[in-house]
Image: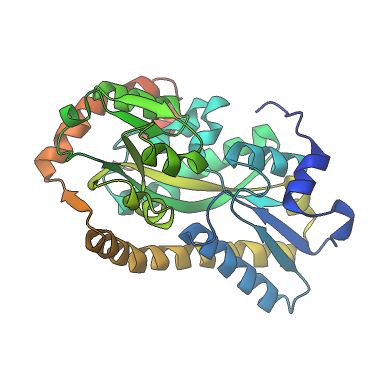
Length: 323
């Protein structure tokens, strides 16, 4: 990863914090998600555990909603020591190493269980270790969610997306996947998506259910297709100076608290998703659950995209994916 010319003064001003105001026992966490999102709730749980079990000798300050910047800016802020921890979507790192593309390729994982097995095993550990090359400590995985498609038409097969202008993240692999379906992928900032849908700048978008619900995209889209085309994950990162300057006891507490916060996040997701689907259905959204055969059509059309990006990565990493 290249070192950014990130403006320290501006970033601190955006976060409303002062470098001098913090004791060594304060952990500054920044992320780009809404404070209603399950990833934020996991960080709140992390804060509760750390502060309680350290008898408030360690405090955690959380800056959500992109106060310090988007995922890329936050990653650079951790690298520079402006914040201590963050959790960007893993695809943000793909510009520096194509290996980080792999978790977010369409249908890399059969389901959530398979994704968690891979990320918490050898495959995920290899990716975390790669962060050392960029002066950042990779410490774990939080879920973003399983990505699904919203639109103003029913989508049951790839051809239904032909000519559709769909918002994606600025991730080449995601754009390639939707191009393979005949769609017109249009990357834009997450914060612009609601108004773009409302104004017809784009016709559709794809995101995990939690984002679709918390950002109220269902208010400006009539259809939700449970395509499950990508398992999207957040990579938890820490500034290495912060991380290794912790005492062994404090580092063990941080790691334990993070692990328990991640487990808590899975509970929140399980509880929330059915409620979110019910609420969107009650709001008048047509929800389409694809059959295995329909999912297979999406898998088939995106297979060349997976192969293309797999070939950019060392075989050892691909071979570490659970079979």
